[in-house]
Length: 366
Ligand code: KG4
Ligand code: ZN
Image (cartoon, rainbow, N blue to C red; front, side, top):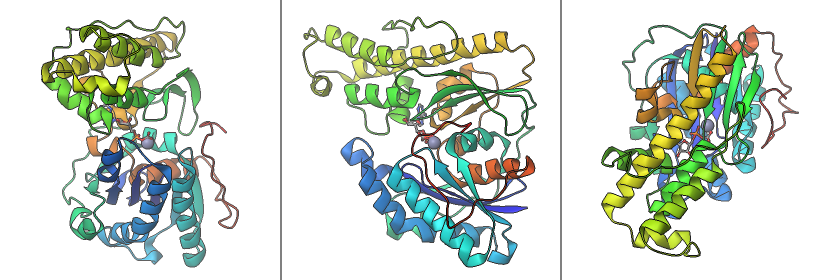
């Protein structure tokens, strides 16, 4: 079964064709990172407009790379929740129109399910390209030789979803069954990386910038407390504030000193040390909670990591479990197609293309 997956929940415009939930036949991603690096974050209206400009070329690229005509496609899957309203609208309207035009069943997929199912994908790396539209054809080309994953996760699975908008531990007894056993009470982990990067004057997106700076830094230079929260819930706003206070203290500035100005006083070495110390604390907090979750669910056979932060090398080095191919950690269409495949296997019915809704904030189980 070949599924065309479409993803536009945030600032990546993506489409891919995946066979039987695993084999990536094509995977085209246009990232808007270049645009938003200038602003230090995503501007929803700009994101939506950029999706609109590249959506159809990305779909056409995915179809061409997969050597598919519309006759070969069995279903269309699209992210309908959660995410930025305008961004979700462009992807879903495109998918709805294509489903009507080509008479294909249409499936609405939750973004976090997609991230989790990136761990069931095998095959080629994602083809990424910049927001420069003229570069689309060159940059969106797919890499032809992929590498197959050694194995797929075994149920019951514990999934750690770590992205820009979410931090959750989920217990999955079987395919397409999700029990949220831990969640963040405030900021998401990716958001915390992005905010700390801003304090340190590192470019957007903060996660990769912190990871890069951390390579040159001393992770034991600064000590940050772990939040004292019983159970499996997370909290990351305290860690962000702890970094802010430590930077102010290091620079002998008062706590009233504005956070956006601190970068002007920091040396490169201080930035690297703060990045490394913060990253170590963030990774340790994640792995501590995961270890508690494992103790509470001794029947678990596999652990999977999902979402943009799962690209983090320091985490990959310390953690044991399944990680998506690095290029599939961030947003892409292949994971949407994979998630839809397993939902269809579990009995999910298609959505009426004339009625599909979007939900900017909705639980994985809704
Ligand atoms: O899954 P994703 O691409 O989009 C959402 O669904 O939110 O995740 C984006 C988040 C951003 O906060 C970004 O800074 C973070 O993932 N991220 C990383 C790394 N690469 C991306 N965080 C830490 N280390 C990385 N290497
Ligand atoms: Zn995502």
